[in-house]
Length: 338
Image (cartoon, rainbow, N blue to C red; front, top):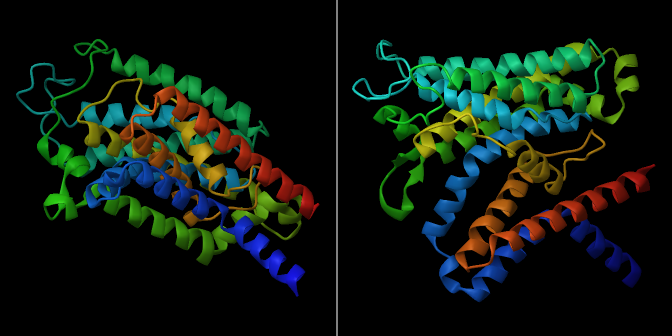
């Protein structure tokens, strides 16, 4: 009986390790400085996490199939620049397109998301139809997208100057909130929650989601069972690209501008959050709740350790250790199943 109880406790900790780590981080920082536990702190952490959650959910689509997408950060940068360049104030002295009339807010946003979707579609096509390994395919697209973004960003009269002077309706999308004061709910948080719910439905309640997990679990078995693997992979990468695009738009709106270096290393943060959140590097395993928690863990590390004055370099060391431990646990679970 004692052995059975011990095994249950062990299984509980293994299955819920990610949530236990998050709680432990919050409690540990709060014990050091009780001011950390406040509505304002929670709001700030959620605000910082929102765009990262959307980008990480995009990365999760690809990781669950057993692939990896290194282009995420550069797609974020491209779509941030695209949306910002078309949503500047009419009287701004360094307007990207001086003769461009005021466009409806939704149009540049839609175009930017569509650009992300197209890049994702190309990634999926190269992986699925040309049989290029995802790491190489998306590495190539990461470099190419950065080059394309830099050429666009360098167009006259901008000439590689940071894009600013954004319209108030666009900035409001990233900085506005429902309500006022510490209890207000930022729009980007609401958008992130909506996206998380939609992705949860796709993962858990659709045939497409089941196909995605089947491909990640065993691609040959998926083919034998009648799943159109190539088509599903193309759609998966396209969805991921669209989510990166949305993340880029919201980053531009939240920060009030954009440069061609926006999104740098975001892909590694997204992949790390997914892995820490339980998305298997071997494919076939992953949940929305885990991904969201993974993002929150890194946000708590960044915000919380800065809050108590820990050197930023120590933050990187802690993040690196968490990633390595998470992957080690993932590999052990994979080997145990084998």
